[in-house]
Length: 236
Image 1 (spheres, rainbow, N blue to C red):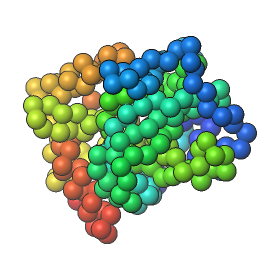
Image 2 (image 1 turned 60 degrees about the horizontal axis):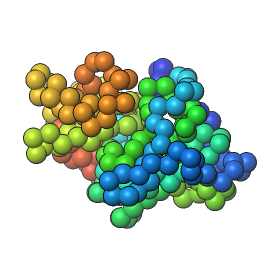
Image 3 (image 1 turned 135 degrees about the vertical axis):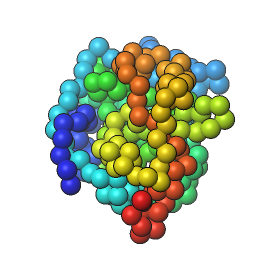
């Protein structure tokens, strides 16, 4: 296991030891917005307060695949509310399960709320599609138990560009592992620029956080590597 400076979730210990003292989620009704389908969407994505960087453990690609019980291609479909303590809840559609039990939808938790968000990582919104690496919370509090934490440090946006699917690394412990993997195609040049621009158009708020082009990988190549590790291979 390696270590380096990375974005950390506030109160990250809550992921494993439980969150017994949190109040029930609220709806922030004075700010509620809906999408074109009438579903509640995130009212404030880039809050005035900031959750700052810290030092956390870093895992390799193989360690991450083995560590989490669910790896899936998911899409946010509705904002469910937030707590005053700094957590936001979402419902997500599960497009494809790569590891774990098959399911059509899950509830997820993101660190941050309408008052404070993780530095450089605004709250998600309806329609956001990404690769989830997570495990169900074992917290005693009913608001958290069985729900999946959105892990900042293994986050890959999923982007469709010219009928092809790609992964864009937002924050990841194991970018270097994927870059060094000869079986995973790295997108470069004008194509990489085009894919990044497609995602910036989808998410103007996130685009303000990134002035440079992010690393882009072929979606199917990464999926193949994940499945290989889960079957006991090396993902190479």
